[in-house]
Image (cartoon, rainbow over all chains, first blue to last red; front, side, top):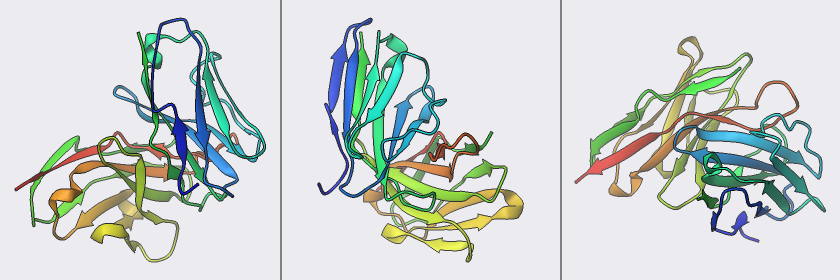
Length: 114
Length: 116
């Protein structure tokens, strides 16, 4: 596609439910990134994929968070047993790979946990 | 650990006036530095980036930034702002050091308001 797309654009869920957030990167981009944007914490880096591999998962806030990427393309961020503090905008970005490559961001998924 | 500080949470500038947004960083190696802009309801758009070489970098929409190693700063400037420049501006440094992560560390952002 022309840009990074994310779905859903908005998600309202009840505390304790699981949610899945999807990211479609720009075609041909090998690197994919997840960030979280919240009022209290600003923009936080969560995880990075090079191909299907995530070298470091230490940025994920808790073990309720997991992410996978299949086929070197689509990625899913899963939050289990959601808590109210998980409410935030989850942003995905992709790049051609390498530290000098520009990261292109999607519009984000706004998650509200009631 | 690295960090980015944007001292100004809000800045108000009159249309046509000049602009400078401040950014200071802490980083344990040679930094890569970025400025992104986020308009309401939109994703982040890259304005400019610095990797090496000339310390004055030009970006899109008439923005420029200057890297000053001695001051650990990367301030964003524009000679004359337009109402369409009203947005949230983020300074970032990367890559994240150690652990094999390749993400960016962002500042808290500066909200730019343009007065007519």
